[in-house]
Structure formats: C-alpha cells, structure tokens
Length: 456
Image (cartoon, rainbow, N blue to C red):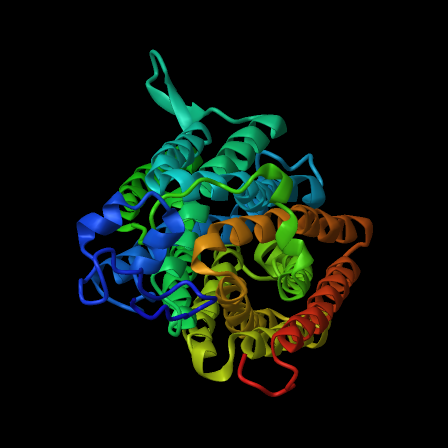
C-alpha cells in the first residue's frame, strides 16, 4: 500500500496499488478508475511550474490583456461619451455601461465555474471570444451605400449599454473565469507568483488600450477604432484559447443546493466580504480619472493618457504582488488595501492641479495593482484544487453587485455636487470602503492562523 500524502488541502498523494504493494500504479489503471477524486490524487501535488503550467498563465495574461485591459480603460470611453454621443446623459448614467461589464464578468462565475469543472475551459472561451469581438464590432459601425462610409451603429444610450455593456460583459465572463481558474490547478507554493504574472496582461492592456483608442479616434474616427479593436481582440483571444489548459480530470458539479455551502467556512466568507468592499471602491479612479483631469485643466490628450499612467503604475504593483508567496498572501492583501484607501483619502481628495493628478495616477495604480492581483491568489488559498472553480465563481458572483453599483454611486456624487466637491465625496466613499475591507481580510487570516504576524 502506497502512503497517501497531503498537500494544499489534501489534494496530493498516491493511489493504492491494485496488484499488491510492489506493483506501481500505471496510467491505464488511473484512466480506468471511475472516481474523479482518486484520479485527482493520482496526479500528485501541483507541479508549480513546467510548460503546460506556464502556458496556462500566459493564456490568462492574454485574456486579461484584452477583456480586463479594456474594462480598466473604460475611463477613456467615459470621457469620450460625456463630450460626444452621450453628452445629454449624466456621468452616473454613462458609468453604468462600464459597471455592467464588470458586473457580468464577475456575476456569471456562479454558473460558469460548474461548466468549467465539468467540461473544461474551451467550451467557454471560444464562444466568449466570439461575443467579445462581436461587441466591439457592433459598437463600431456599418457601411451605407452608396457613400460607402462607416457610420456608428450605436447612437442611442440603450444601444451602447447593450453592445458595450451587456454583450462585452458576457464575452468577458466567458473568457475570465476559465482562464483565471486554470492556473490554480498547476500552482500551490508559487501561486502568488503565478497569479501575479497572469495579471500582468491586464495591467499592460490598461496601459496600451487608452493610448491606442485615443490615437485611433483622432486618426480614423470612432467607428473604425472600435472595428480595429475587434480585430486585435480576435487574434489575442484566439491565442489565449490555445494556451489555457487544465490539469485535473473533469468532474460532476456539486448540487445547486450546496452552491452557497462555502459561505459557511469562516476564512472564505470573511475574504469574500473584504473583496466585495474592495470592488465597491477601488475602481472609482479607473472610471473618473480622465474627467477629473479635464476638470483640472489637462488637455484632451493628456486627460486620456492619465489612465495609461494609472495602469502603468499597476504593472509595478502586479510585479510586487508576486512577493505574496514570501510575505504572506493575506498579509500582502491587507497592507495593499490600507495603502489604497489612504491614497484615495489623502491624495485624491485634495487634488488641485494637473501635476498632482499625474502623480496620483502612478501611485494609486501601483498600490491598487498589488491589491487586485493578490485577491486572486488569496481566494485560491482558501480553496482546494478540486473546488477552486466553485469558490472563485461564488466569491466573484457576490462581489459583482458591488462592482456594478460602485461607479454609479460615485458618478451620482459627481453629478450632484459641482466642481471639486463631487470628486471629493467620491474619494471619501471609495477610500472608506477600501479601508474597511482590511478588517475582514485580517479576520480571514486569523481564522487560518491565530498569530497576527504569521506569513499567511
């Protein structure tokens, strides 16, 4: 009898030899075994590296570059719409387009995690690519004879909401959840490093897309810009579909009656509350940084590029988040939440010059980049490889309601109070809720290890 070891919640080890103590288990024995748990155990602990593992990370980074990068760049579209086709609508109303993207991206994980566990990533990622590309194309334009000129398909608010909000959100969620869950099957000790590398794509996308969108709009107009984005997204997401692969065997999803069962686990429940508060406040600058820069007197070009600076700062933060394996993932999340909240309260509120908002963009991008990257590693830490898809999906589904309401709440502050006051109230709200998340993150950590300064 081979000894059964444990690693990462008891998922690693060896299966019992079928023909006696001296007979090794063969691949055919494993394949013939109908029990998914036994086959999972036969795989041993996550390898923490290797070609397939790092290809999965690359695939996650590519999907993040496209769907998360564009979502994080919505501030560019917010500023464009406020001055152009949706000028008659309030900032709060326009921000619903971006928040709808985030809501659907996170909420649908409650259902997609089950499909991922049963059928793998590609049954989700391929239609997700089609939906995302179609969303960008529908927001672009169509040809009208005989002039053969490209004119906007979307001219009304509801059309932008459906095309760029709902359809983009559906494509994003189909790409996001399988690609984020896959690396968790390959990494254990080096999970923060893997998720940090995976998140670099979304940070890089947040740098590239605002610059690309601004320059293309100036050079070729908005309709052709959106069509060009669609072609780029098609190539990048197709490559991601090739790269993302899973390690564990397919399994039957748990009954719907037990979907909420993980909320009975204190570490997971507390982390979920903390993540909800992070999502409620953290994304405010990603939506309203460009419009705030315009208010302070920045040129149109510079206003758009502030968002690129914000995401460039987040790249550095995402690299630092990889040290969560050494410092403790929950420690890193708690410290980065404190820093993000402090920067919002102490830096965003008194902004009164263009130079100050440029400095804010880099600093806040850095600390928030650590925070969003380490969230993914933390939720995978309180899950075992066999239920990581289920728990990731549940946590983000709950957090989606906070990501949906956060930007419109801040937009309502900006619309209700003239000038700097609205932006200051938005900073107060966002800073307070992000700071409050720290208490729940620390509580989740203490449920795992009573030592306050333990590396967890």
